[in-house]
Image (cartoon, rainbow, N blue to C red; front, side):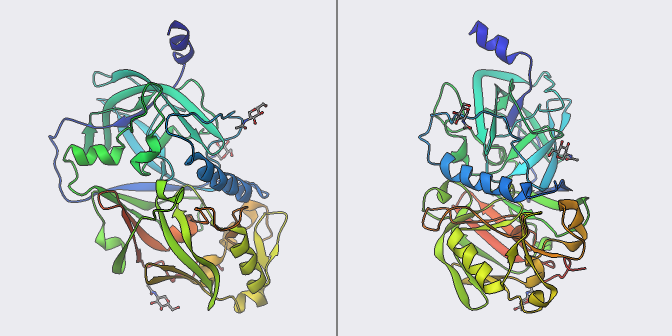
Length: 412
Ligand SMILES: *[C@@H]1O[C@H](CO)[C@@H](O)[C@H](O)[C@H]1NC(C)=O
Ligand SMILES: *[C@@H]1O[C@H](CO)[C@@H](O)[C@H](O)[C@H]1NC(C)=O
Ligand SMILES: *[C@@H]1O[C@H](CO)[C@@H](O)[C@H](O)[C@H]1NC(C)=O
């Protein structure tokens, strides 16, 4: 143990918050605004890192609880182009950390840049937490502490904090706010195979929110940094969507079921390119990834060609004029991604190494065939067009149209 604590002492910290201090009880949903940062790299890295994440999500969920995934942490953990950041306070008085909002993982931790500041509310559990991500990992000590998401959302209680001795690729962010299903915390503790309650779980069990769910509003933008996301704990913010909120069950298919997974089929125009199958929605993925056979069908139907400079599909202006909508059929309801929603914002072409007047598409190849239980990832390009709801209590999700669903913003 001495060696271990020596190993851990120099580093950072992560934690999950919760609590037994029910002083603040706003039972209505409470929203936290999110800063969107676009941190694009030139070249095909954005596309390949998304594909790596997709493959990692598939294999990671299949590991037996309690077994650790070997990870070498030589690559950045988060290298997606679009990142949503929440300011989260930990401790009392709180230190503020900028955390990446991730539906694809469920541990919450801090300390990658701003060191974890222990206060009188910090309580070590003596356990060690290890979380592996797509291409990296971190290890740290587990703490219980007070977590402040907004003035109205303060929790304190059960487990989860981490002091990390090995973290790679998070800079300039301080850690992760994991809002995936609780199951994903299984096997992240050294001495136990128990799940760790997530921040959402703790808000609920402490009575801070009365609905064990959350809602997410993203919006398209062509700016590199903008405050345009809203994360609502304890229900939905009805002002952020229009029309009906359609609710549907989580999928039971592995491994999609371990994430915010569901079943959908995909049509391009009136041609089905992906038969009904399981996949996920993910705030940690920028693009729309489809299983290779569906992607190939999309390429054939659109006439797009792969642009090796950006790694994205590209089409001519003439092809764009005949581009059809993509339709996602989910539990009897159809969600339409209009042609503009299938375009990478032209204002940001040069930011990814493309040419200003080219037209790039946001549909990419997952790198594996359909039938593997996680055949699509509806990433940010989908979530910026539809409000989304994640209901842990009833194992269901929901989508609704917004003022951005049919907005033409990308072609300028
Ligand atoms: C952008 O990403 C690079 C690494 O990919 C990182 O070094 C840099 O700090 C990031 N910048 C911002 C503003 O996120
Ligand atoms: C880690 O590195 C070793 C040796 O370089 C290699 O064999 C292994 O495949 C790597 N593991 C991962 C997860 O990249
Ligand atoms: C978006 O446009 C389609 C037609 O392309 C229409 O059916 C749908 O109702 C529109 N949705 C919204 C939210 O305006």
